[in-house]
Image (cartoon, rainbow, N blue to C red; front, top):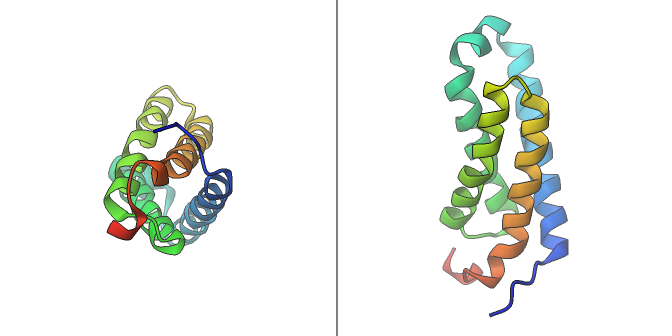
Amino acid sequence: MSARIDVSLLWRSALVQLIAVGVLFAILAILLPKSFFESWGWIAGPVAWMGCAALTARVLRLPLWPTLLGALLAGIPDAICVVIGLHTIGDVIAIILFALWCGWMPNRYSVAAA
């Protein structure tokens, strides 16, 4: 089996995830004080990321569990970047890696299994 990437799905997954994360971030930033993120960001961020990935899977009709696995793996470099103070760069890297995973995934997992 070749390692082909569905470029259309790559871009669509990047766009959906970016919009979902951006909208959720904006809503939370408006509703919650900065102190919430300083105290609880370590758990709120990953939960939000995974929730947005689940939404991306639903919108694009991707299999849920493999999509969440891709989001988890893409989140690891993001977490490292957060620890070293490069949160924004980590977010960009995570979106790119997640999109690559989603573009690659249909060749590995049956979409019908969703």
